[in-house]
Image 1: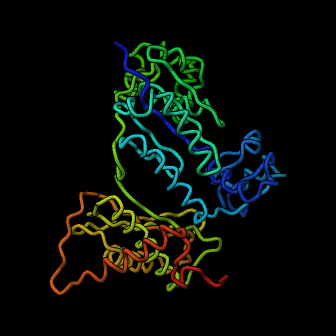
Image 2: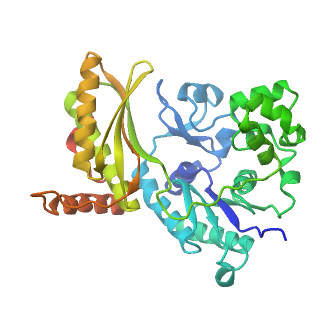
Length: 388
């Protein structure tokens, strides 16, 4: 008996652009790019009108300007996007606890066990699309199949504002005519090797002997062939907090050399990471620092501690790493600064000797304000820089 199509991949359509069009409806139908058009900027996302010119996420802004010189550029406003992202994920959790977030604007669901309440997988997908439109004002595309891999490809194929159901047993036929890069796990280097073998579609890949793929890619080749046939055993990771690490980064419009502001940015990042840890009920064993100097010289430092989850503790380690690394590099101006935590584990912290719950209460108050009014609603003055 074939498994039922109960795995959904839900993806908001051009999320940041869609949000901006809610408050700038006069821009509908125009090529819009979210990002900073300066020399060191990158594209956050682009409208479908801009994508027709070849513009895509993570593209250098200079390249995007060449491809689409008449595009309208808008700076990202994450405090505006955040509440809509929260509302989107809340809608998904109304249908099943088996929700695996894959970003602010997408997630996987497995709705097995929810059919008696809400209908079949495709029926649930249709209901989700209607609710997202009604409650957020923007649209979502959904792929429905028996596994995460095929549902992801299907949601991409359904864009924009569509739904595509791949019936069990038809996965290979659905994938066969699609481009190699449409298959998750096929990056530019893998695609180049496969194209040298005359492979241009997923169907071509599926037709290759497993022995050849293993010879070229090792065990990775066996997995490639399975995926080309639409076979994927990965399960939806139920609940929040499936990520292995949490990080925050800030890229400056102009290289930053003021120590006070750099440390303030680190503290703000530590506070936001601490909020994410609290929301997912976890602590971390390792704190890492990332620094980038102009033009693109990047260094990282890390230190493993006992379990940490409070902003003060994360910041203390991060600023210690920063002070040492910055001094080693002649206190040069910084282009990017970031903090991350890894080695995540269930949170189980006791108060230390002489410690009171006040720090937790303050952190909770700060997090609650940002949750309600957006990430940028409460910031340290030094984070803002001279422009404010």
